[in-house]
Image 1 (tube, rainbow, N blue to C red):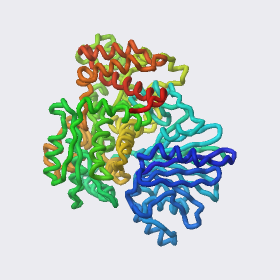
Image 2 (tube, helix red, strand yellow; image 1 turned 30 degrees about the horizontal axis):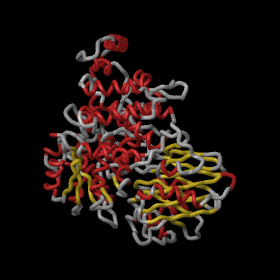
Image 3 (cartoon, helix red, strand yellow; image 1 turned 135 degrees about the horizontal axis):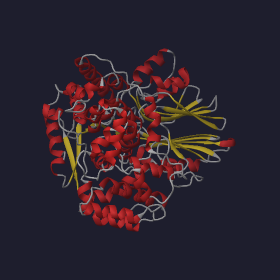
Image 4 (tube, helix red, strand yellow; image 1 turned 90 degrees about the vertical axis):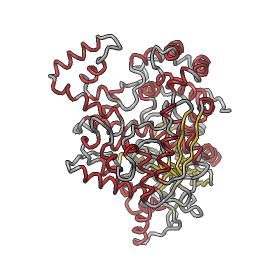
Length: 620
């Protein structure tokens, strides 16, 4: 895992080495082992290395035989040995054993189409000197980040926004459209970021800068094509694909470990690691005061069953508060997912023992793991009600007082899926955002949540409702929240995180599984659980998902109350946020009127982000 920086000056103005060096230095945490630079007139590349494969010779930028192609690369290519051997047979000359070097030679052979041959996680910037092209790309699922910006004199690229804002002509201004979206989703959907004129490259996309202009293209999108075969067929395919993926993800010249919660996703990874004959250290985080939801005891039980060394850390409210500003800084943008801090702490623990960890991100999206995915089954009864009557029921239910049993069920059952499901988080509705924020959404070009997800629903039109929900999450929630926090919280500690479920071959199997093997009335991820049932105890296989749960609801009423009150009261966001409304949410939560914990947390994280990136307050 590494950090990359690129600059393309317009009008052939030379790149200043001092600027690209400063931009690269800011992301030193992504690669503390060494740096590397390439400057050729108006092109500049900067690199920070976390050495994982070919430690002695894998320095970057990497180049080809005649030094006309230069590459900086972040990630891992798991099929690089196979690709390398094929290229050597065709007389390509390699000077290292690093996985990134195959990208240079694949580009020579296939041009932009070579992306289809890669199996792994990556973002990279490649400069083709002969054709004067800067080519940049991001992996299929968006595991590794890549940001870009344009000024009047340059295009700027980096693994992290904090690097881009070091460029002299970049101003740190809030994108109000993004802020409006953030309070819906708890993150900013791509391609926008919370910063004006700074963008995220979408997963499965690449871009080209040529003749002073930038062009974006999509090269991959997840496609589901269910095939009604017996469930045992998929059980065997899943086991085979996952074991192959795990074997590839274990490739490393440095120690490898695994995150371990109490759920099937991470337990499955550790059990499959055991199947390969490897023993790795496992790591778990728990939270003080979390009672039965504390995962440490159960994770230790799983580790003992599988014969893996286990390490854990228990986080107190004080520990958590002390690290929030640092975590927000490393995230670049506000991501109001409380579990991000859980990853931060467990990554810090893991770094004491290993340099690479495997983790279970992506299993829920591919195999149907979220409880909300069961909703189409429970709402199926509404499909038998005529549309005019459904509409009447919807209007009637909306007139019922809040708290009436069955109101929410009727409203959701009488609403089309695309009008009720925007992803795993739906924090503030449009009316509440108008009370919270001091600007007109229409004036800043903000769109309704339905408009943001519409493009994905349109592409998923032929799918059943459960598969539509998974597709929406793969395109939004997965890169915007799950993978964003996973990358940033591990890279904060110079730790490489690998996600074996998000593998092309694993997805190829998952995409063909009918929804009724994924979701049943009784459980989620049914076929995945069945596939892992012969290598894990049944109490682990069918245990309810928790996933490093943080007791934010409890802490905001007790340990965090005064801190939260002070943050809201003293924040210099009065010009944009209604503080009285925010404090009222906090008081309602404090005295048990409503559970406003997620809303309050979303406000607090933005205010801390604002203090760091807009007010420029230095972290202590």
